[in-house]
Length: 599
Image (cartoon, rainbow, N blue to C red; front, top):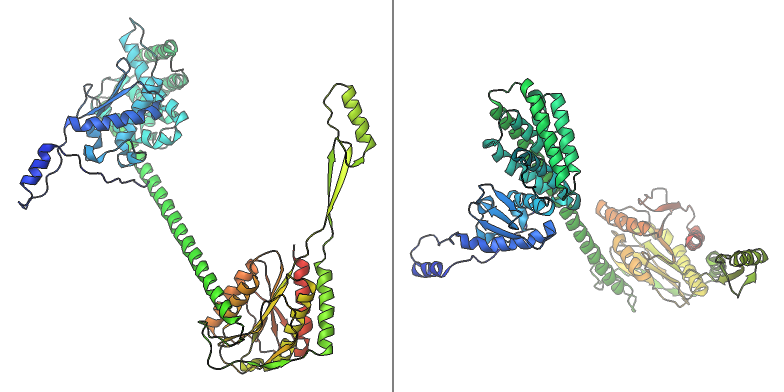
């Protein structure tokens, strides 16, 4: 559990300030603020503010000073409406370092706060009063049963205080073992009530209290321990104001001990045995709490690590988007120049050889593809039927008769006899097609068919839907836009040659992704990569990362190859074309399928 450190200015007196000024340059360590009873007044006042939330009472006073009048670490005085608290529980902290009013500050002193929570439980639930003339021994037994009862009641309303109540058990029970007020069998019974009673209300675990349970069963006997267990279990169900029932349980407690005591031998070293067993219990609870804190700290660190990794991933993605935007802006320039990976114009290596008029076959293919895309994008009208008790709508006679019958029977009519059908046209999804063609020396055979396919797809998409966009990038070491994202149908076919070296598919995908919004749903999205994938390991890794991001976003990725020596890029759908002239048909079929699958 992480601590909340709040650095505060030390509270010093005028004398302290004078001493510091007088000995400012003497070379000795700086004077420390002195701890005095007056310095603890503020701590007590802030504890009183927190006591309101813990106990639900606003009529109580908390006094905090070194030592207490009762001699106990803390005590609650119902008649005075006061909780007194020993400042020694905060050791080694000084009063100027303690700020209970700040929620979370208690995590720096869990033992002291656990005792304070215990006293708050008394203030909230120990509201029954002792009747005049009651047997002091019975009153003592009732107060013994009250210890675990109030903690169980407090745990019901504030379950998150369990950790502090476990800490208070170690702080309060161990001192009671060192100075027992009961002797003999009653001492063992008192230890059972304090330890095993806390087990039964959920403060301690059964495994942690096994040492005390085994010892008390040997000393008290199984029958007497079972009887005492039933008594404190019944006391746990007692109402806060029910003094009669509480004293009745205490009376049964005394009778059970009196009846069984003559037949039970008392070990000579009973106090030492009980102290040892209680020590084992406290060590076990301390180990469990330490393990829980370590597990919680590990979980917190894991969450922090995960959050840091997610933040780094978001930052990396944002940087990648900015780089993709810059790449797209530089590639899709109006002059059609070739650019380097950093966006600057390349001094050489432009693969574009010119433009030509489309052939009649290409124009026919574009028209056929446009019709195919239009048919694939068609969506049936949706129908939505609603019923209502009043027009407009078609009257359903059965529902009308049912409504009349309901009204005649005197009930509220629920039948709705009018049915209205609303038909809506489904929007036609646009098309986004990006083509990345490898123009290294091994891809020369693909130049002519890919140039034809790029023009056919761009022409068909523009004729099908004005919102459709296509773009084609030729890549080797550099990037060149053959067609740019535009709503206008291209008039001429851009021709190019393949004579480059190395590859830069990663940046080509980034430019197409940003320019065509291939990662955004709502359109038929397709990326076609025409390549033999004869890449180096770094080039392949960068390309595969981009392909995975696109496929995760729902964009179809098709790889067209022309030779048997081609490699398969992981994540893409591989299509081998023995005849390069088949590329336009294959790309058109993939585009049609992409828009057909759009939801």
